[in-house]
Amino acid sequence: MIKTTDIVMQDYAYDLPDERIAKYPLPERDSSKLLLYKHGKITETVFRNLPSHLPPKTLLVRNNTRVIRARLFFRKPTGARIEIFCLDPVLPGSYETALSARKECVWHCMLGNAKRWTVNSEPLVKEIPTDKGPLALSAKRICENQVAFSWDDNTFTFGELLESMGILPIPPYLNRDTEPADLKTYQTVYARHKGSVAAPTAGLHFTEAVFADLAKSDIPIMDVTLHVGAGTFKPVKSETIGGHEMHREIIIVDDKTLRCLNRSGRTVVAVGTTSVRTLESLYWLAVRILNNPDIQPEELIVTQWESYGRDENSLPSKKEAFAALLEWLENNELTQLIFPTEILIAPGYRFRVVEAIITNFHQPNSTLLLLIGAFIGNDWQRVYRYALEHSFRFLSYGDSSLLIP
Image 1: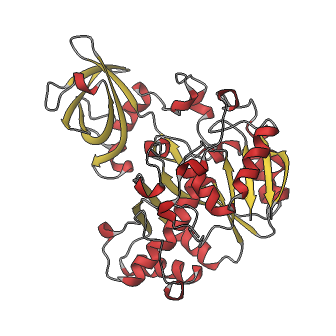
Image 2: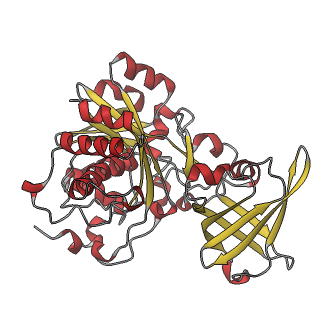
Image 3: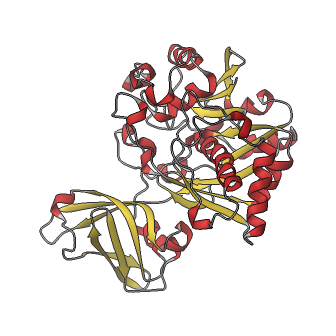
């Protein structure tokens, strides 16, 4: 078997015509097509029929992150337009506190037209109309990829300022500007915790009617939070996956969810690759804690390659892993885990928690497609060939699949 780091990305290429990329969502979220891959057999249905196709005694896990209006545009006195794309907070260090800041905050940012705005040059200022009159928001580039924001009215939070002047980022491959309808359609109906710059798109198909049918089928739902970063669109430029550096994303999971995962004997079905990355990261975080019970909260992390090359006999069961996480929380008098993950799931990875996946159709040569290849093996080619031949719509606003190996 080929070593994971030696996987050639060209083996995960396929021809995706531009007309197959869904530029807009369907009028009804749950009317999208759903490809069913069950133990090697491929069929199709409509997404609203999902509850009847889930395994008996399913536990559905979804990502409740909410996309923020992270793109800001400023003008220099010369007229040059500068784009500031807020990625993740630096000071205060959490999304909740940074978005709640009332005077100043610092963010990691991607910058458009960056050559026209040098480090430590004069701040850019933008006036924002409010019911109290204009408010001045200042942005100063303090280093290569960090911007300090400050404003002159502390009755407004930074999150409120983003809501009033920011633009919701939509995927670059849509090749269009954000439109008013995207403010609603590019959020899941259960989005709660602000912090993502991209939607967990497998969840876009769910409606309240689908959730009502899930409840009738006695299928419980648990929420996790992974704030999706712009790195989810980062292309793999290396010939092999071993040369690719994974992006870092923040995970938040509370003790209630961990207890449910620990006690449940149900089949764990992840809604989207972000939920997959969260659940599998929890397992490897538990391994880290079991190896170092005195680890401090600021030391918690799951790195890109740590799940590979392990002695299977030394690894805990799923139940032991979640028990270890709960014990660590109790010992540290905490009620939730907050940690970054860089996990890369590619062929050669052994899944520890997730047993079925609901997911959209991903870009060629992407780490998300590698995740699908890890989950169903080379059958990913059959699945994508079927989708292309049967008029499925691709990528964020496209159709979805239920994968049960």
